[in-house]
Image (cartoon, rainbow, N blue to C red; front, side):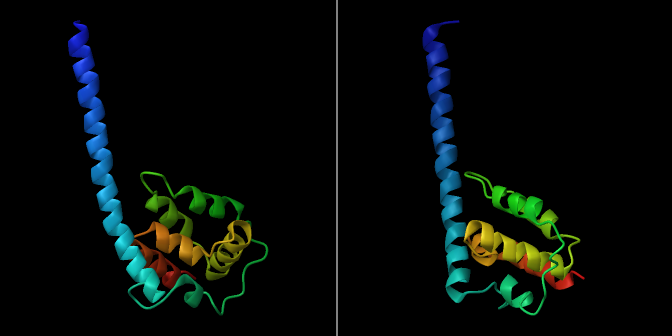
Length: 137
């Protein structure tokens, strides 16, 4: 194949990747604005936070949180977050287990689980997590 054609294909591919990166950045900026708005009010759109929902719950001290907090932390991606990993982690847990996860996340990473998820998720996604907590046993 002709070198000029190959170089042209490579340059066109790089330009395409750059445009894709810029477009995904602008989408993220809109999501960040939504999240900042929710954070500035300190709550999800329902007026609740994870901390509020679990405030009167005693953590399950026998529950091993290590896999869960690692999954939550690793769900935050550079280009794309894994919201499904968050939902899966919060599904089918008791409130006592969720309280243990919340406490251990703060202890290990120095960041509250609320703040971490509010910075990662859209308002709607954060609300989905709150609903999972509300319906847990």
